[in-house]
Image (tube, rainbow, N blue to C red; front, top):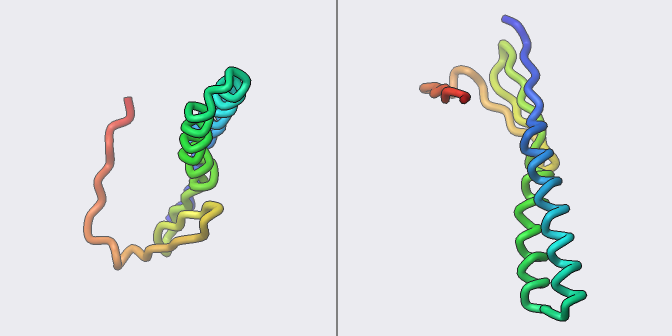
Length: 90
């Protein structure tokens, strides 16, 4: 069986973009002395951090499926998988 390596670059790009967007909003809010809005922007940035850290890669090989990210590495063997659903992209 072939080995496939899939990088989650789109999540990484979106997460980084969200972090930049939230940082700019937070800076603008604090400069305008809107501290509650700035705090909200800082809390919203947590979603961007989660996306950046959670993005990683998937490896599909003869043993099973492996996901690697900053949170850790998870592996599931093919005999543990009962069904697979494939979504249509665009």
